[in-house]
Image (cartoon, rainbow, N blue to C red):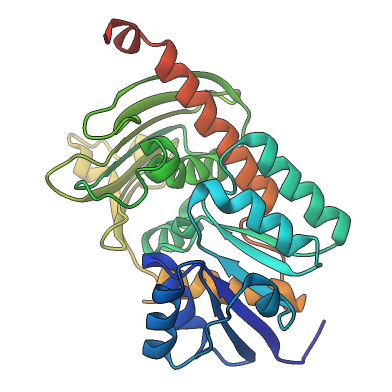
Length: 325
C-alpha cells in the first residue's frame, strides 16, 4: 500500500472529462498532472478554466502519471486504453469499456498481465439511492428500470443501448448476480442512424427477470428503478438519489390484516449526500493505492458490454426491426 501522492491525469475533456478534471485537481493525496485532449482548443479552454496544464500530446502526460481517467469518445476507448495499460498505468475508463466485446476483453487481459488497476465508469453504482438500498437487498427477483432522456447529440455515435442502457445493465448484473439465460428486446432509430429507444427483457438462471427501457428521444428526463424481492419492494428515483422500501412485517401472516398497509413497513431510504462521480473517483484512487478492491472491475465492464451487444443483436432480430424498410 502506497502513501505517496498519486500522480493523476485526465484524457478527454468533453462534457464528462471536464468534471473528472474539476474534481480530481482538488482531491487530497494526489498530484494533478494535467489534461490531454486531441482538440487543442478545447484543451486550452479547460486548462485555463481549471488552472492546470494542457499537454500537447498523449505521451508527455503519460510520462508523468501513475493513473489516468479516460473520457474520450467510445470508438477511441480501445486505442487510448491500450496506450495507457501498456505503460503499466492505472486506468479508469468511462463506460462502456470499449466499442466491442473483443476490445474490452483485450483491455482486461492487458491490465491483468501488467498487474495494474482497471476500473470502469459505471457511476450509478455510487448513486445515493442505490447506496441507501444496499443494506436491505436480499435476492431481488423482478426489476423494472426506466432511463429516459431528451435528445442531445452527445453519445449518438453509438446506439442508446451502449449510450444509456448500459448503466442499468451493469446495475442489474450487480444486483442479481446470476447468469443471463435469455434476452428479448426491441428498439428503433428515430433521430439518428442508431437505435434511439429500446426495451429489453432479461431472464436469469436464478429465476430473476429484469425489464429495462432506455430512450434518448423523450420529452422529460426519468431514471427510476423498481425492485421486488421475497420480503419487500423498492422504489428508487436515481435522478433524485432518493427511494423507499416497503418490507413485510415480521410475523405478518398472523396479524389478521385486512389491508396491505397493515402488513407492510415503510422505510425511507437515505444515504449521505455526495456527488456520485466524486465517490467513483475516490474509490478509483483508493484502489490505485491498494486500500480497497476495485468497485467496478474491467471484467464487470466487459460483462455489461457483452450483455449490451446481446440486447443489440436481439433488437436486430426482433419483428419490429424486420418490418422496417
